[in-house]
Image (cartoon, rainbow, N blue to C red):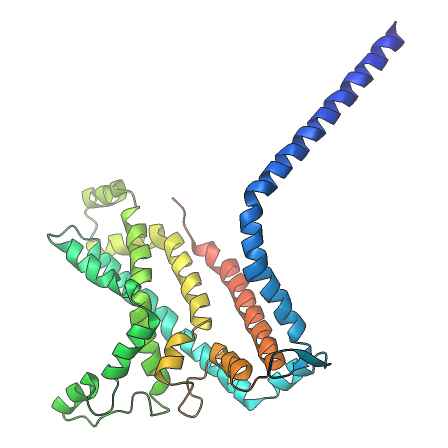
Length: 312
């Protein structure tokens, strides 16, 4: 009798496990079905270009981009011995250093102002975020006019104070700074909007408790606002950091990498190699190096930055 019970229990357990396995398979297939559109889009526009770029980086190519000779790591060796690439690497890091802190600081200042409960503050919020709706091409044309050496408003203002006109886009000492200023202006709208949303999500009872204790405005800003805003700040710093490394449009419109390659950032260097010099293999190698740089620095940023993030 006991043997029969044991056999029946084994049969029941086997059927139960089989039914559970079938259910898991159905759930998995159903999940894949829902994810299929995203998988197709990622495969076509992300994974395929990535693997294709890695593949091309080991070859010499003709003008149409077709591979001709396998050269292995020679493209990478040539890049790191190229003064032009090393210069573009230096310019890119300087550009990131100029634009990321500038964008975050200006946006944070405007967000703190716009978060005040004042009459008509909605108008200023609209003005501060308006740059988000302007394309890079249109904004670049606007700044090109401002930077014009003779009719540009910036030089006309300097002349009113008796200061000699500056070649904003033609002087090697000023070109990268000028492009950085225009980039900060272009990026302020998005960063401001995200930071304003973060400020408005902070619980008001924290400020009410601080007011009861007689805390000053700057004490609340230092001890409440900045710590509670740290997750949002971490996000905008990371996004601004990655976007700065990928900058192309304003450089192409304003300076085309000049003068003397002082604004030749890595992405513009990749563009020149691929679509002007038709060296798709070398351009792909540069793209892989840029990908690795962004990946490593982002991982370092997550490793160090998350320690200072305070979640509510």
